Image 1: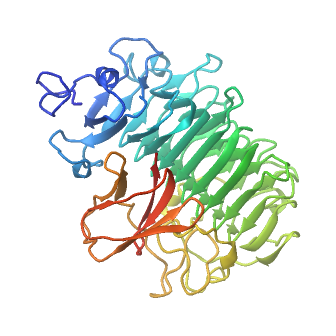
Image 2 (image 1 turned 90 degrees about the vertical axis):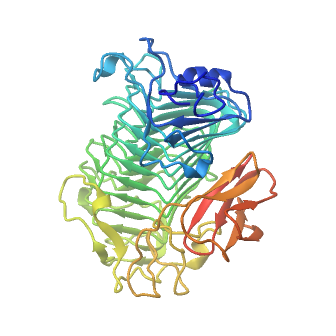
Image 3 (image 1 turned 180 degrees about the horizontal axis):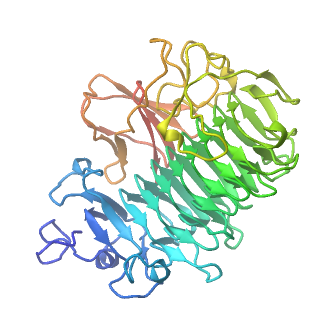
Length: 504
């Protein structure tokens, strides 16, 4: 797919590439891939705001090509920016944009959306169109796997500025959500999970960044009552603003936030919390594990407006750091939360191993009273930090093998508190590791390496969703054949690199 191709438009080569992405999507069959060269692509050449790019069952969509590649790993995402743009009307005028840029409805297979900038979806409140960037509904039979995508400048006046999902299985990996909004009366600036005929969504978010998003509730994520399972791992939430909450969930069967930081955000309503969980059902427990929640600002002025508020007594904070947050009367966490082996200013009445100490961040912000972008600062721990080797290893989930920077989670024999693990071999905090450079080739049932390092002699360890090691495979070439049952897996090189993949 190349808008500048001049051949016969058969879609069988770069020379004869399709020039219209909608035509390409209408011609493909399950098992096909669409490779899209750099450029701007709009859902329509007309002005119909209901137009969107509808993803197809069994068809993977990849951006980031220059238009000469013969292998997927040859593409350069940074050099070849590929944009799916909802700005179909008057340039720069949002009110005539597509309601939703991409849709993925009634998906019952595993599909991939990889390497795109998705922008300028716009729908006003009350018009029935949710999810300005991506709308996924009725997709419990498959898995919509979105990776290496940037969702930017998308708006929904009601629900889900960036993404709206309902009754769907969605995996988000190495994506960025920047400047998405659900409006002053809407929920879920970046992501909203809703209800569709009683279906409960499964959402996995890994290695994603949420920056400068806004909404009335859930500037980054609003969950509703309709999650089956929810996993957020190795993510960043920073510089977001909301009236009532930055991240909020009302119900789920299982949920975990791990190896993640929530730093530099602001909530400014009369009844607000930075992180809120409203379910009281005993079998619906949220665990916050190895996270750093620091220097957030809650401008509310009542005793129930903590930084973290939960309803019920089944929710837990483990191996985590709270520090420098501003809230009414200094209140950090509601009293029902159980806290174990964590740093909490002022302590907490419900838990064990709680430290009331300065965590000694390497280079924190000194902003006061306003949100900021924490990616410009350093929240690793100094060598003298009381959080180093102060966690509890038995609280680390078996599949939680890497910290936020991509480094091995447990070093020196005992896990650290917070989202970053200190490198005890050098005595200095770790530098962020590069993103994983492996991916799973569904058609060839193989793991492929696309980086520049010499991988010879390394061993891939394959971990299943239950945390069990199911295979160890020596790496000799850049392609490793695997034979695995359907499911989600974690692959680790034995160094500091890991990635998750799904076998459909």
